[in-house]
Length: 327
Image (tube, rainbow, N blue to C red; front, top):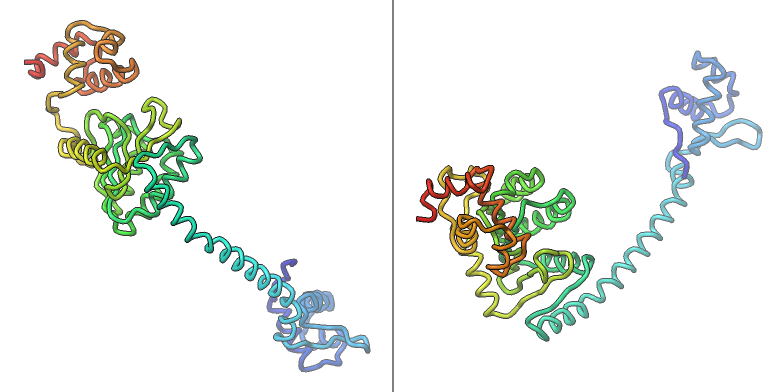
């Protein structure tokens, strides 16, 4: 429907005069209003377009009540809107009718296997959306690496805020290096303000998402997280994953705080890498010795160099001894 002209002050005056003096010509109306004939004609054109004036059989103009004009002008559009609403309601009802089948099938899927493989980025996103919307108690996540991309933040933030709005307890763990990622800092600020707890630590073993402590999502290949994920519901594995999460969580710093100047000595894999670095081993040799990928070793070495504020391996070795990390 075409947008009608605005009813300005002159059109309002002409309309009132037409109601009072229905037999006047346009020239007579112009005289009564002390206005130009062209001005009156333009006002009558606007009123006619709105259905407020209608040509009489005798050639003049007849004023129509606003209610009648509205019914005639808007009736077809309102009827179209009504039909669209009916069609939308019918479509919604058909979709909602599948809810029972979906929930039943989903429960059967979960009961059939304690480990489910999901491949393809679209399927992974659908599963994340499903788990996020059905999460009711807690969400614990672990994110290795230097932080999220802008695109990932735009996808994750609305879901995170929706989860927090439902009262779900959310704990999110990043690596320290993610503090320099602007998009990740923005995400941390937003979800912290909404009630989440966000911390960071030196090194994390893998990306892990645990929903309500009864379903965990793990990447099939940590080096290629988009290739596929495993959904784990086995109680023993879930118990191990939660103990792993708590181990890193207890040693992490609140994301809003600065790192302590004196970092704790590295432990576990980090310490093993540091020992081999001090022995003069290159990344490839360290990776072969520890049974890890070269990329993972490079990331650990980079993190250690950053913590030591060292520009070379020699400088890192000196500062390692100064900190007493290998004593």
